[in-house]
Length: 358
Length: 278
Image (cartoon, rainbow over all chains, first blue to last red; front, side, top):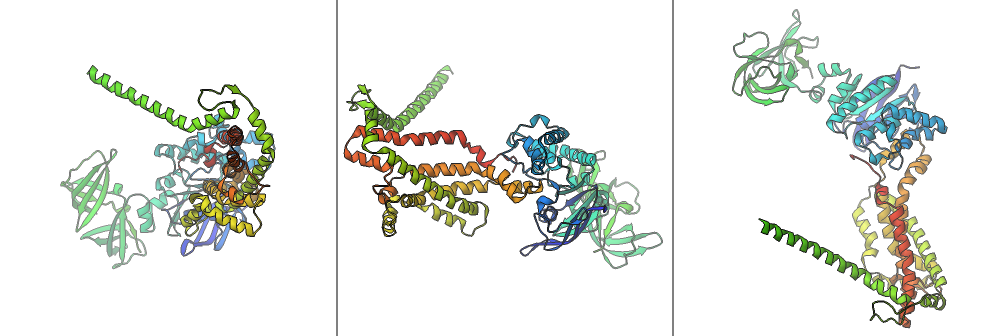
């Protein structure tokens, strides 16, 4: 039994001139929940359809559970899938929808009955067995979709933006329900979404995709804390970007200095850094400290003026003018408040300054 | 204040009265001629001057059946309708599939061209049909009359079926394949049940179209292929008003049965299925 449940090996897929998947290699471990995250048109759905067999890659191979399934038709791949628009069979009751995969596999009636009811109990829908999909709410329909995907214990569960058609509150509830269900069953799952919050909350690992390529693969905190490209930093969470030049590297102190917009900002040094090189510094707005003007200076403390404030309830969002033509976005908790025009000091904590060398 | 309220109430009740009167007139306009025919078909010595016929009889129906050979004529009508429905459906399914599910350049123009026979008066091209059919010896054949009917039946079939196939959600078919259904089982368990109501309603529409068709039949029929509408028309010329009325009633019965079938069997919501949030 191989450790990898799903493997995409150098998969390339074109739609006419559009390169939807550009040499994607992705290994999904047994029992892991992997999210394919990216903006629309990034190729995440194309990659998923290569796994389901609705797309056949132009180049490369798809392996599921140690078998090359590149040419195997969808119906013989033993998959379970949840769709964005639910895709329930409108002419069948909830019971028949969930029982469909078992009926196709010619399970006998008694066993089918038992397993369908078990699946419906799992999603708390046993009361709705004789309802038709059109009689259910969106959330209920998606739970039925989930039960239909899981009823025959497939090797892999695929979820294609399963929560996009639900309202915000229900989306959050269902997020936990799905994670809980996947944990209980220990099934391998591939989750496609464009919602970064969903990806961070749900996944064991996240594959960030952009323009048909795999941008970065890692755990949610790796992706959030150590994005390797401007795209990833920008796509996931909020970021302040400062473009500058490395002016000094202090190997003994393991720090370097980036000069940008008239500021000398100290950052943690990495071996690739050398003076004169261009660098992109970024920091999360909630990692920036805002201090009163009277506060004593220090490393990475710069004077600034409050340009704009927005009240967000649990947070305050500020735009601070710092240095030469630089505007930083800063988010603080609601305890200390500054007004527009206030003189402040901005502190960029050295360990939280990240640098991307491009 | 009370005066204003009274005034408003008066306007409101006047409006209600107006609507009721309008609906009543509208109903009378539609159903009165029909009632006249119904009365005449069972009445003896009734010339429309009394409220009801002085004497009721089924004699005119007996006449209609015996004198005009209505059994054979009904048979002709049904054979032609079944042939027309079959041909229109056979044309409609592939064209409807293409229109509903494929990207075709100039789709709107093509659709308009297909709908054209329904838009222009049949008499305008019935003459052409007759000329061509005489050359091909299709006049006075069931197949020939049915073929002429297809010109007006097929547009209906294509229109209804393309809407049906368009409503068939690709994701649902993909869901079936992920669930393990091969293309054949997907067809029988998912596609067929979803499109059957559409096919049925297309067949019902084309059936009534062919059954009621007059102009094209008039230009292509012969003594062996007389249909009910044409025979009824001829009976008017023969001058027996009562017998003609009885024939009209006989002519109407199947349409009424079909109407009830549509109401009962083909619920419109079954046509599109119930998706939420799409």
